[in-house]
Length: 209
Image (cartoon, rainbow, N blue to C red; front, side):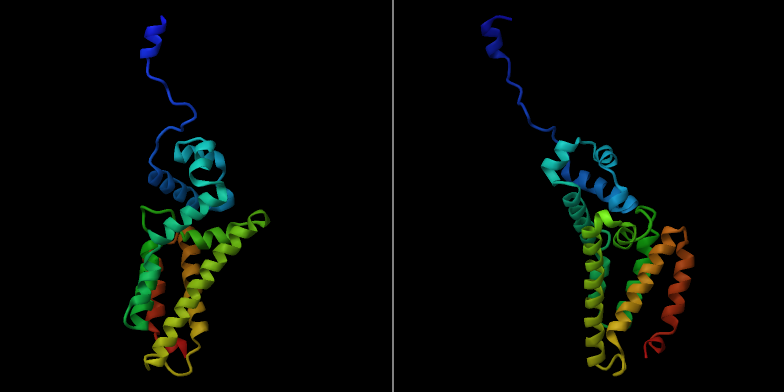
């Protein structure tokens, strides 16, 4: 190739990562973390699922912790968004019913990994991931506080008895949610979990005095 021919050849960019769909990659990361937990998800597994190499992951999403947090935010705003939406129900009973039924439908959805990503992640984190575990526990505690606030409003309006312990009631629902998650992860069917929910709702509000 002479000098003139070389000049005509287009220059190839150097050091530029291959283009990829960041949303699709983040969805893939979410699926891995949801299935494997934070510690159980290796960088090798993540690179294979995302279809990009480690440098591209680090350049786009940050380290593993940063990638997990972005995947968690996507989880909360997407598949798990219903838990926030139910707080807008006009009655505490309606909210509780929608929360529990929605939880079962969510946990047993064939398009999702089984179980709750936050519950499973907090249970499977070891000492090496204490910070992530604390953050997941914090998310759970924050949601309990929102439930308690909603029940306080229901008590103020007269829907719930004056002696209702709203904090305990919120933890009661959160505990049921966590139990349903563990059961779903262990293979419990939708019908089995719906039967449990039916028993809980049948006693409402006698079981909150």
